[in-house]
Every structure is written in C-alpha cells, then in structure tokens.
Amino acid sequence: MDSLRAIDDWGAPFAAAGVVRAGAVAATHGPRGVPVRWASVTKLLTGLAALVAVEEGTVDLDEPAGPPGATLRHLLAHASGLPTGAAPGRRRVYSNEGIEAVAALIEHHAGIPFGEYFAAAVVEPLELHGSLQGSAASEYVGPPDDLLALGQELLTPQLVAPETLDEATTVQFAGLDGVLPGWGRQEPNDWGLAFELRDDKSPHWTGTRNSPATFGHFGQSGTFLWVDPELGAACGVLTTRDFGDWAKEAWSAFSDSVVADLRSVGEQRA
Image (cartoon, helix red, strand yellow):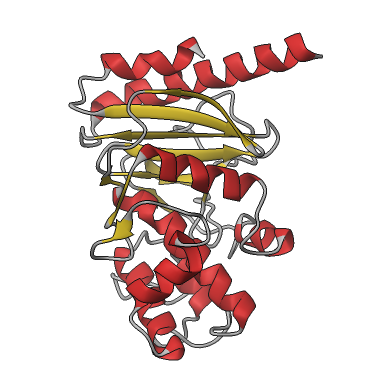
C-alpha cells in the first residue's frame, strides 16, 4: 500500500505503520520489531485487560471505584470527574488518573501487581513482545508488530466475547461534552470503555473517510491505532516524534489515503 509511505515525510526519527484485516497483515512500512513508547495508546491494552477482568468476575463495571459516586464504568469512560473534582457523569474529562485508578482496582481484587495481571491477561495470550514499564495509562513499550496484533484482536476478539467488545465500543454516558486532547472541545465527546469513538467528531485524528463506527486511541509520542469495523480493517502507526501541529495536518490525510487504498483493493477483488 503506497499510502503507508507517507510516514517517511513526517520528520520522525523512527516511524512504522501497518494495516491489518481479520486474521492477516495487509501491509506494513518501516521496521516492525523496534520497541517504542506507545504513550496513551497504552490505554487500549489496559482497557482490554479490564474487560478480561470483568468477564472473569475479578471486577464489575458498575462497582464503586474512584471518587465518591463513581464506578469502574465511569473511570474507563473518562466520566468519573478525575482529576478536576467534577461530579461523576456530568462531563467528559480525559484522565490518566482515572485509568490508573482502574489498574489499582484490578490489582486490589486480583491480589497481584497490575503489571503481572496485565501480562497474563493481554501480553501473553496475544504473544506481544513488549511490556508495561510504568503507568497503565501511558507506559507500554513495544514494537509495531504488537500494535498490529492488538488491531487484529480488536477486529476479531478472542480474549473477550464479541458482545463485551461491542459494549466497550458503544457510547457510555451519552451526551457528555468535553475536550478531546489536542483537538479541542467536542459536543458531544463520545467515549466507550477506554476506547475513543470517532462518531461524527470534527476535527478528529482519524480520516474524514473513516466510518463513524471507528474507534481507537492516539498517543502524545506520535502514535495511534484506529479500528474501522465497517471497513474491516485496523491501521496503526508508531513514531518517536511527539504529537503537535504536524500531526493534525498529517494524520487525517494519511488515514484518508489508507482508507482509499483499502476500498480500492476491495473493489478490485469484487
């Protein structure tokens, strides 16, 4: 896919990109085995570990957690009020602290350090090569192949039931406004359970050609993963150039080109 080569023009010391479809890697560009920091894309792995914990009965989405009146569901959906002290369920406040509280809750109930639970629940079954090296919100370090493996899991879930992932990628606490970091105020700022939902947000880090059903996350270290169920594909990028205005110009155009390539291939196969 020629569209992936656009990352070479981003001025990043390291950049790699890939696209997966269900059960197969469709295309890659750049080194696949170099571990880099995922920043907030880590939240997708932590969210997936939390879903495993829910299915196992280790935690419950609606049990009290975090600030008074909040639940695990609020924490995962950035609706707990952390870190500002707002009342739970009133507005969408993006919160690393909330995700760290999720990890603390799982650690408490599981009786083992969250890093160990994370490894057993997600890293080992997905055969990832990286590891969590700090905050459950932002400190996974792993190679592009790990990101592609996560993309495949989110297209065709094996670690959790499809119904569980469907709930996690459905709007939680609908109608909440808030700021999408780096992209400004969104009304509403829809979010699932650790998964940021594209819906009809504008501007947005995914492409204008991505379907409203697209979900994923991006990271401050110049990373992102989106999953477009209607397209049947996921696209991930890892770089070592911090997010900034360059990304606002580059990422959406890049994703639009990737979607166009995928649709073109689909039309040729048809």
